[in-house]
Amino acid sequence: MTRVRLSSSLLLLVAASLMLIEGCGHKRPPASATGAGTYPRASSPGSGAEPLDSGPDVRPLDSDLTSGEDITFSDASGEGGPLADVYFEYDQSALTDAARATLAQHATWIKAHGGAKLSVEGHCDERGTVEYNLALGDQRAQAARDYLVSLGVTRERLNAISLGKERPVDASHTEAAWARNRRAHFRVSR
Image 1 (cartoon, rainbow, N blue to C red):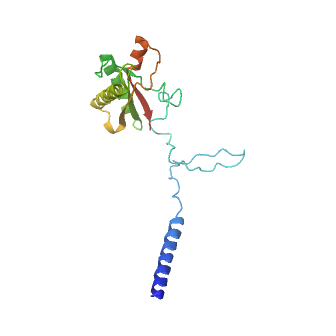
Image 2: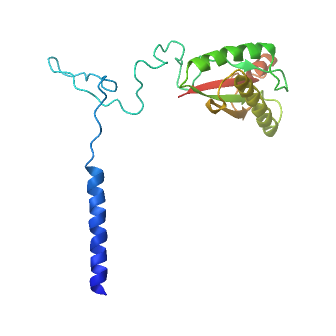
């Protein structure tokens, strides 16, 4: 019985060792013959350029986002991005004609930038309860998302969320501030 246990334990140890050796022995495949995925390394003068692994987050220069002029952001939050907010009337989630026109421009931009994904944030002014404004913000985000989908944007690229009255763009307590806070805001990601 001890001999059977010893030989099965030994067999299991040998099998595990072989799997470990097999997994560690593979090298990464070389970059393609076209040179995609390799970039010259900045090094001391006179030395030759060495290829660098591009990594999973580096896009080749021939991608659809190479120009960058309309995907720049003024800060890491996404404020000042390429897509303007759309605004809503008091206590409403119906899209205005101005909002539809803006969303039509957004749909064109989104379709031209295939790698972009969007979060559509629904916002409200400070009046009303937290629960009410979260529900209204959700209706606003969904209205904007659904209209973009009706214009040909793939639903999987759009995420609708409500922030209610929690993140006002203008914290003043005036009609003008409240009008700026009743909005759908767009955050672009990849």
